[in-house]
Image (cartoon, one colour):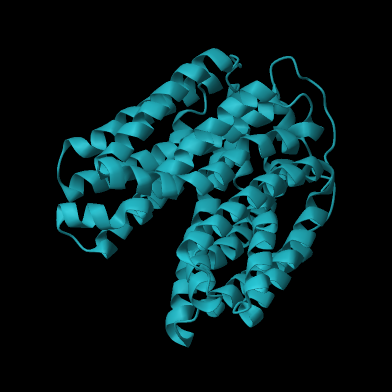
Length: 401
């Protein structure tokens, strides 16, 4: 099972690297097209928009398809679109393709999470299986931006798209061999997946996900100026610290996966507390190098690493169907966008100080903790989860929050 889960992790890895590749080569693209850096930055937002809106639409389209066929279709289309980006030398063309690849990325993310949940040997292991799949976020975040920057500097920004397109083609081949064929969702299960989206409890848990991810990215987006301008670290040292952040995120993700199934609420409470304390210290004492270094690593351990616990709580009330999982992906994407945008607004209002972004992230963490505290703690029905188990997995069990 682990080998198959790592194949799904690679799908998430490629998606995250593609999302970040534009950010790693903004000046080169701006110079080539004769546009502003802000216009190039818009390409990142368009990709996120595609994930948030197009991903759930594609999940709806694929709701009756076997999981392996749906995922392979998405990966193949993704590979083709990636290599098509440099073929037409026009900004509007790149913008269009980025929207389309964003749609495929959102669907691929949701399909990978659903597939990973179905590969779990029993419902109590869903969180642990998903934590392996979501490891692609951590690895992709670490290597995505610097790799695209390196490739663009050596061989031109177009080469980055060719490399990722080739990686997606290779992933298609690997997934064809590694992933087992699973039965498509029945008509009743697909209909239940759609009905689950009407649940207020599900959307309240989506809200916790949005605020938790927003807390992490409201601060993470401004770590570089905090480390270099406030703490006085050199550029190369900052790069090493950010790599350490990524490593901590990967380790934290695996640790959370071990506890997410049985202790999701406790994991989230502890994570929100760590986020609030570490971001508060960064805001107050971020100019002290030792504090800045230590607290950035703590945020790595306690930020986006809460994803497995968030996914587990969503699965408890909404199952792990393609549509519920993909909408959750869209919500998480909106959390990234919202956290970054709110930090940009607060910094512009209260001064160009990265400490403001740390306070913004801390405020998000408090809101996430408050929403979590208001939610009813009770055992969830597993009817949707049982429907999403692998063929032959008829066990019925209760999952506790």
